[in-house]
Length: 250
Ligand code: F6R
Image (cartoon, rainbow, N blue to C red; front, side):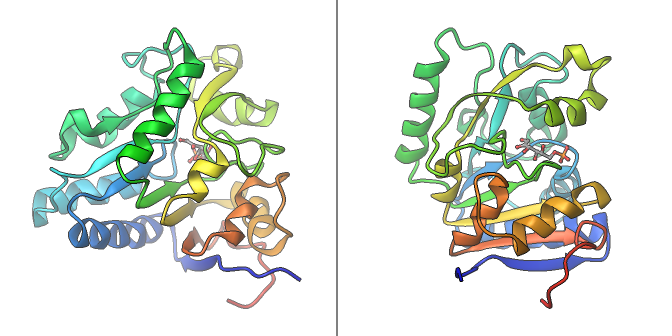
């Protein structure tokens, strides 16, 4: 038997998932104006970012002292590339809130010395006091950030090779599958597990298997998200479709 701390909130649909996540993020930002926020890219958190932008514009939610550390970036893509995660984050979130650009940290896909960059990234997170709240999506293979199945539980920020499944999943954003970069810089599972609070978002049927294994399977590096079972303050917010293969009572 193992102890599972991971909690689950089932949302009605994508918009409800996004609103529920935004209300937790907003509460944390209001409690601590200097919150260190870890963020993800991808389709899943877009609604969360839209709702946070609305809260900033309509309710004055203040990001002026918040610090950001993003999870990952494709190796080889410059920040100006429209499929880079840097471009995605500014375009979909940072350009629309009052964040100080100097407090935004995103791995540098064009770094000349990626190993040194990764070490510096870990150091910068530590110097900022560690991540207070980390937002995660989940891959259909259970990856978190770009920690693919088999990634060590204590891994740190490093260069990783994307799995064939992830390349296939992400091809939808590129003209063809061959254009999807094969490597990325990703925070490690160990880096993520050090965050004080974690929210993992999941939406849609193609995440249902991964969510079932994450919550109801044993914690294993073969399903990286399942390692969150050991985190003391992690919540999954899944919409009904993503939660549809769970068998337990929550
Ligand atoms: C992106 C990231 C990835 C995504 C995951 C799901 O920064 O860390 O782990 O969260 O691949 O992607 P979407 O949300 O596009 O289904």
